[in-house]
Image (spheres, one colour):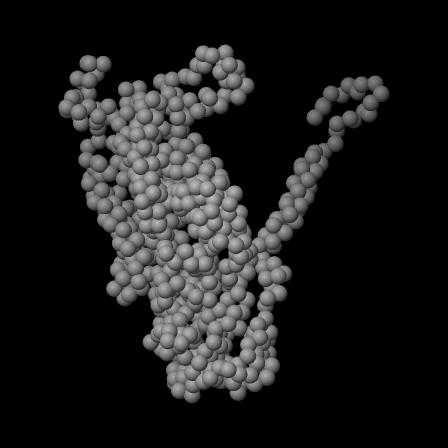
Length: 196
Length: 428
């Protein structure tokens, strides 16, 4: 800062005397400009991240209607829900009894068959056919496939075994086969993908 | 940046002098891989593999760019477009087999390159940054190889994508959201295939960029050598060109010979027949296995079968990523000042055991999940971590290394007739 007491003619007597504020005007402009650019960068990054999420056409395929009238007790059918396999099984009374006989404390992901089915429709077990370990399709929904040591589903990839309520009983999978949201439209028709 | 006795670039032609003043690109090449880069005189053939890896990357980029002219990244037609490359495109079969087997060759060469670094202590000071950048390249290669394997949209492609993106769903709370975000859907489909193609095209160029940093970082201390003793003076080195350009050229010839054997005589040896079946989201192949180069890591993933505080699945994923991330800490886990395993009797034995251990993991990774294999995998996975976290620090403290030679030249002359340094000095 100038400390010269000589004031050139025509100029203010105290040209540079102001205190240096903190932050200085120039620092403030710097911070403001960089912050604004940062906000702009975030605004541009958001759509770049969001474009990775499922697009409208993928989300549009989000419900599946299933006709249950042809599924006999003991049978299962495989259909698709959101491009993933969906297992629909009509449990036999013995399979229901087997599932109810299991003590909850022995389960990795404790759930009763009631919690996994709709009231009064305990024989209709509707789950995703996606192993909760790494996403393989478990065997057991089609005729003659290996249903594993617990009589439900068996994943051939890493040996996860599910019981007749599609609950994880053995192997590396952490969770029971996922029960998607669905509702009964009539006694023989369900819509998967909408909450009941 | 280089040794003081390095040769200087002195262009004689007026055109080259003019270019050197405006854009000293020939000077950069001369100092990087020409006569201006002095290299230890005792490098063995294990030092070929860096150049071979670079050559493999170049071949992958060339064949890949050409394949992209014929491939269609759309789930409806991708499988068919690959078949059309095989049957209809002129020389398409050759380009595709070269690209598919080229990936295996690239990974094989890089594994030997990493093994060389482990044996001769190339990861130690002052070359830690070279090692760290190398691990980054390895991670990028794994991502690129995985996404490339998805592109033919066969059964293994689809289920590989399903399993690998399934890793992310192991993350607590946000895992499933991340998985859906990565795939752009609830299962691998068109959105996933498109983005994998985009990234598969991009990442090799990122790898090329990191390789430049890798070489830059290497050229600051200069190359390591089989004795692990630093270069002391001019007689320890020879210029990279013509000595190692010639040696690398010979190695490249052998590499291409083996590469050609795969392409022309057993192009599908390393692949899986299931990948010639078009992707079917409703049917899992009986036995999902990744490509051979991922098998040891896959075995580590599979070896967690019971919950322990965290779910087994999360442990498996953490351990698998941890087994690679662990390599970032290697320069500080091994505190022994001696680099080369030739002078480290204990380390040498344990490194041999580690190699056998990784081979066992590779076997288990590809085997059926029988109880016997699972237990074998668990023991081998535990040993892998024990090697880096327990054995290595312990060996570094307790080992008594063999006496090091005073210089590279002394080691070289002792090998060739046992001449002493004094004798060679008198000759010089």
